[in-house]
Amino acid sequence: MSKPHLQALEEALLRKGWRVVAVHPGDDYRISATWEIHRGSRRPALFIDFDGLDDVACLPLEVSYGCHIRGRSAKDEAASLYFRRPNKSRGLWEQDLACFVLALDNSEGDAEPETPADRPGD
Image (tube, rainbow, N blue to C red; front, side, top):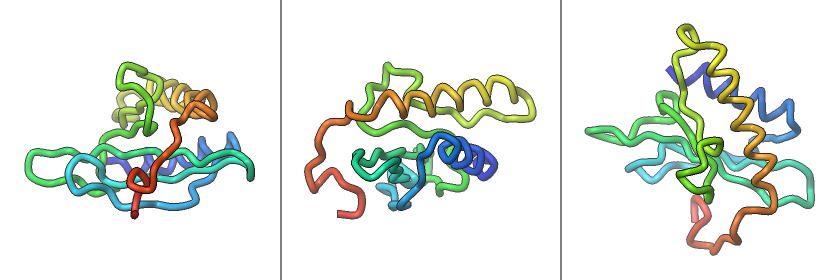
């Protein structure tokens, strides 16, 4: 179900000047994959982790059910995005998507410095 969500998320990011510069593999447990996104040449990259925790195996990115901004508190609802069924609640999905992208704008400069062990693919 998340292919349309992924496309809508990427389009919303592009409209705000963000671009996906890399897709990193997940952790084979709870993270399906990670998008590394960037806006501007002097700003640090941010990471969006896609949720894939399931009963049997980690779900692939194409069927993940949500995502969150790495490094943000789980209590910060704007920093996570649930992939709602757009046919049943399109207005709510679009509102959630807009809030999520706005939370990315508010995350710039807030991210804690990473160590090499924190980077995907290292």
